[in-house]
Amino acid sequence: MNIQVIGTAVEVLGKVYQVKCPENEVAALQQAALYLEEKMNEIRKVNHVLSIDRIAVIAALNMTHQLLTVEHEKNMYAQMVNERLQGLEQVIDSIPKDNTSPPSVD
Image (cartoon, rainbow, N blue to C red; front, side, top):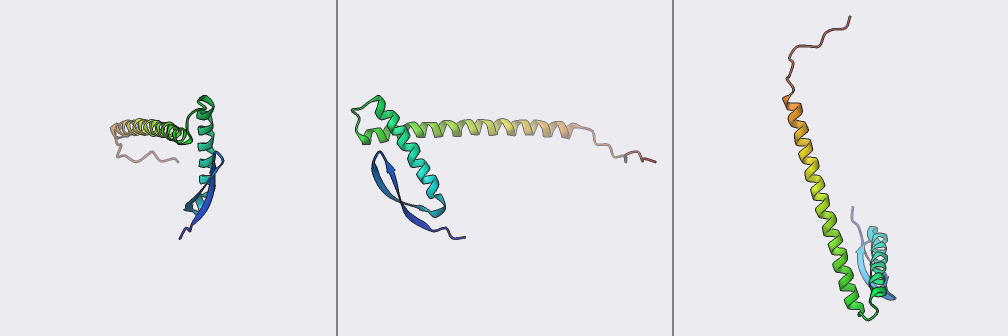
């Protein structure tokens, strides 16, 4: 399946940006732009004197920190699940194997 890359516009803080993305990801890109604008507005409310560029960098740093934190937590949970599965496999493997056939039901 060949996904077409198209040009689309996103608006952040009143400024329109033309970007290209896969056609099936336009809605996600629009959602990302709204999220970015929301975060930038939060920063702007706290400090009115910051330039838009500085607000964008701070928002990017905050969102990157959030992403890395979530990835770290995901990796920790995955490791815990794998350790638990290994423990369960060891328990199963330690159960004696009975080579006799089950009793027949008459």
